[in-house]
Image (cartoon, helix red, strand yellow):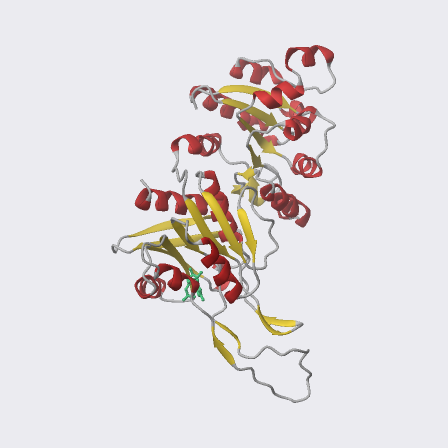
Length: 396
Ligand code: C5P
């Protein structure tokens, strides 16, 4: 991180004590660090600590003529190569979502064009609250990179997700764009989410896929410098910032969107849970419940991944396999049958089901017979590991 300018925002959580170590590690990695603290952060740890560790004055107030004459909020926002908010409390996250500018840290966040990374830290119940989860989704959708939180024991005595990542982990993630995989110039095409197959104008057949894995992979590919087209079925997620986003409903629409974009693609990643069958004859009007029983005739949908993998000189093809049993056998069978380069397999049974969950574990199989396990982690970290494997194997 030699000469990289890191603007570190510190907010008022007990994890603020870890930010001292964070500054030390960033400086050790060669970064130039400037610190912005909220009022509440200063209740936990003194600005003097950060002044001593960063070698720069600490910025604490928005409307102080003396401080603004030194380096004002706009200058600070322009100065940064990257802005890291660690710890990021639930309150500051909510203020970032709302676009508030009543204190220095949030004003700098609004004013910076640099990439923003946040490391949330809070009580596990506050993290799990739908208000916080919605806020996280909004920030992710706006291109903010979210690191953590980790699970474990909390200062308040609870156990769960909400611990700030350790300083060394944060520094490693910040350094990734400089040391991590590069897919610069690669056009990557991804499918994500479920498909919906219409039965009549008001009903459809679908599945529980949330689209989270595909969206996380899209963000990881963007972070590695790829140009990404994301073809997504219906999900509750915001389109990742910077991706070319194509929204579809049915498998046949997904196939059309993929084929329209595949020509320039060097990489195809199929995470979508495409419905295997569609209703053979979609009713023009709402079907009435006139009988005690009814049956629907179904017909096979196209296999999008197999069709892309059959293109001669086509992209590197990576598939996903969700299985409820015999993971390795079924996944390797799919790899061969669909002529793939790589397949990421996961179990979707019981409480470890990946569907809808924020974390997952993957078993990766390659065409040459090699395999690798990626242990349970949040889908963002897992996506970065998958992208690293793709870059190492096919684009280095
Ligand atoms: O055969 P199965 O559905 O288990 O294969 C899973 C893989 O194939 C996933 O990568 C999925 O996105 C892809 N697929 C597809 N089109 C289908 C069915 C699956 O692209 N119709």
